[in-house]
Length: 380
Image 1 (cartoon, helix red, strand yellow):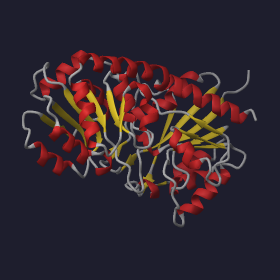
Image 2 (image 1 turned 90 degrees about the vertical axis):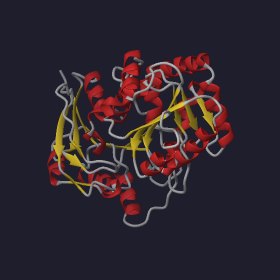
Image 3 (image 1 turned 60 degrees about the vertical axis):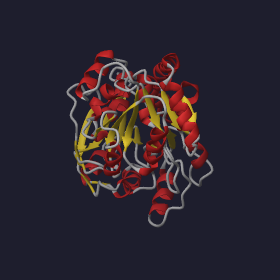
């Protein structure tokens, strides 16, 4: 009987337990044929908060914790020598869920044995000219790579013409844990009681994500100010705009709730407390929405979504929600008002989103596609 193939998957995002769903699902699906090891930081500072490695007693893959340095800005995050020691073992394929132009991506390319296939996952959907040394890192990493994976059509359009990316490529979306994110009337009532809201009545507009300008909070506050239909609003996240959001919310003490200390594991409960999720992301000079994970999490919870046309959002939503021009304030007022006034319209979109989550974005499907691509590369 042949020995199982050995897969090493590395990502600073694996510090969060839910982000290791991919490697655990790959380990489950590939049992007997693949041995999967995931490498995660033991601690990172992160953009918004510090995170210690979140343990999981039910981990299916083997998990290695390693030190990282300079972890607040992701583009200069570097791994300690413990990773180099791990990579000196015999691996059949190395999967790097780090961008190929950042320090850690270059490190992994440098430390991967020459005979070992290396696959990058990239979500860069804005064409950029990187200054040295990042342009040199990208060139080296992609010259070393065997293939690459992306989660979005806008990434394909951006990177495919770029030098170094004419390698085997597979478009595989991000996934959502449909056993963790699911519709729950009990969760809805529990969170609304916690927020000191009536459990039924006025529909709740929800926002989930970073409180930063590019996520469209300025537009959303203006749109809500213009609504003629009764509403409540729940904001879940944190970021630099928290102060201005709270100042605005003072005008609506009974209608607005802002929750900044919600753990990722608690997100499904808060999503279930929403009647609509809005994602009014705004394209800026160096960024456009790369995927919008909150959209597929809302789908899985049976929450209808309205998203802007920034970046990947229209491809993620398609016909399972409403897509509105990112700058079109009047269209945003109309779209939100339409769903606030239509329980049947909300239910129709909720059903479409739930189906889309289970057929396209469930981790089983996403992991299966990764294994197929890895096997294809090894069989060449």
